[in-house]
Image (cartoon, rainbow, N blue to C red):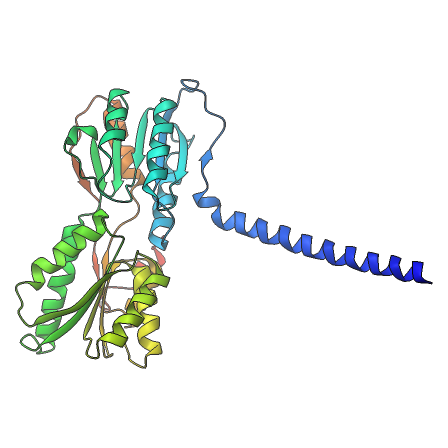
Length: 350
């Protein structure tokens, strides 16, 4: 009798183990599917010089936002076998040391071109000098670098971050005039992106170049929120506790904006066109533009992530022996409730 009970107990434990193992496998499969876009990839093992295609090593800085997801898709959809490319893709996961390691790997593999979005602006001189000595052209995408010798890279393809910041400031000027509040004290908080990144530096510079012309624009606080929704919410919660009279939130990307809006609404205050707090955002992702159309975000300054084709155009020019410019800016717009139409939303691929 005891033996049967032990066997039954053993079978029951084994059954539970099988169920738990199955659940774990399903979870791992789902996780793999979700992270697949940002996984390090090669179409097949690459042997130096063993391909007729153009070999491009791409180091993406991470996967911190919806914008970055769209930027990665643009790259992976452009540098395909069909288009004559062999892509080696690396996700640096927000760490500069990972990017430097990836760049050195690309150099050792003798790729034809290196493309990367630098996490921060500084600290690249040595590895870029190594690429130059190896005769590999480097193209910056999305963000820029601060180096003593700008011949270490061929060109930068991306957004005019200073202009984006200025556009946020100019829109606020016009909006306050329209409301008859141009001369009133306006209390502003700023959610900044990753410290030291080109986008954070440029957008901050651009906005404050406009703000400094208005003595009644009182910046209560500005904090880094790392371009993520979770950090945006955390920083906004702290600001709401410290500052009672916030009139305007300037958020340097949509993901931080989403987190900030959650925090504001949970505090009992309202946002947007008819709300207590004006919300200015940057990126122009589909979800954010939907909120613009609904009046929850007052204005969204577009930052276009579809940069893969622009980079490909640069490579094609270099392949044909043509000179290229040092900087290329992608096309961008400013969105408010007046121009976010159904067509705009339906055509948004990010």
